[in-house]
Amino acid sequence: MGMPSARPAMHAEKPGAEVLDAFCAASTMLASVLLEPPSAEQVDRLSDLDLLTEWPQPAAARPAGQSGLEEITTSLRTDPLAELIADYRHLFDAPDHSRANPYESVRRSEEHLMLGAHTLAVRAWYEHRGLVAPARTKVPDDHLGLELAFVSTLLLDALSATEADDEPGRDGALEALRRFLGEHPLAFGSAVAQDMKAHAHTGYFRGWGRVLEATLDDLGARFA
Image 1 (tube, helix red, strand yellow):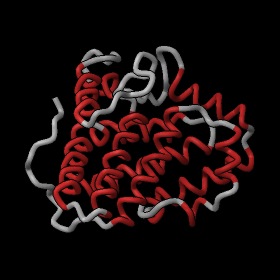
Image 2: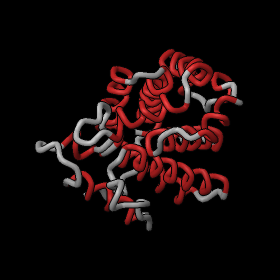
Image 3: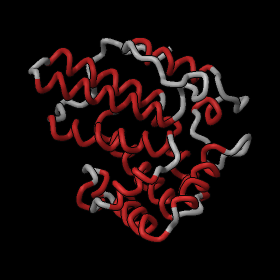
Image 4: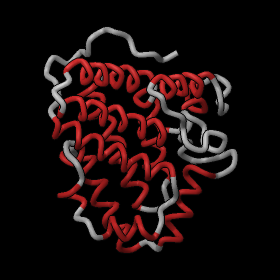
């Protein structure tokens, strides 16, 4: 199962606190978008932001990220909350036919069923860091949103160690991040992003598909 090894991270240049913080914030927001339908509070908060300038770099610098943020911004002004919620259900929550299924076991196993070997492998990663996925019986561990929340946790661990001048702690968190990204979210997350772009009924979720795609590309380039 996916346990961190002692092999040092591949990247010689260690990311600074600002980079770690930016990726942590982006991963946290994307996890929220994927895990829960939009709420009035979330829509109001996002509507008050200038996403093009306030979204954490570097994904916003990519053309796909920029166009996605623009599409989200337009949709927030024009699409009713009820349509956003319906689109979320259509993409992620429709019984037996979610158009952008977010579960790794469904995407990667031969049977295309939930609660498979990939679920258990991801669960082992969480348990190794002393974590348990919330509402495990309702949302299996290998939901892409939960995996991105775990990515955020590893980034936060690396950030905390960096700020404490704890080099072994930072390197351990970055190595765990490298391994986990390669074994799990990077192995299927782009397919979820592609399906979001192809099947969303609203610019809101098409835009988040583009931002997800750009962020996964940047996570892979920077940490994996």
